[in-house]
Length: 106
Image (cartoon, rainbow, N blue to C red):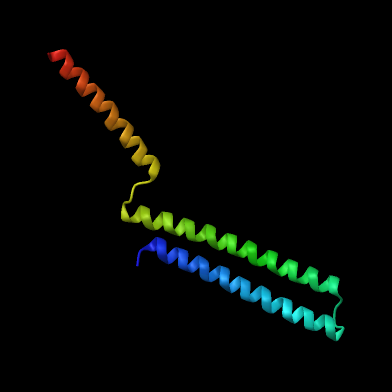
């Protein structure tokens, strides 16, 4: 299994888990509202705050995964896109210079 596919599966798993947590949280707060423990506004505020914290945590996790993937690829010696672009530019320039030298010698 390649690392991109694994990363996609992990992210989908995180999205699914967050969705399940949100559903369960809404069920619990709805029950509390029915029981009179909290009012509807408090329930909505609580759900919104918890879900916002989950989103923030997911964003932090995504950033951490991205950093780890970059480090992993760097450790393997996989060049960055900018390095490949620079090398392509250098090759193009060298090919032009070589053609010019061949044309001069004729």
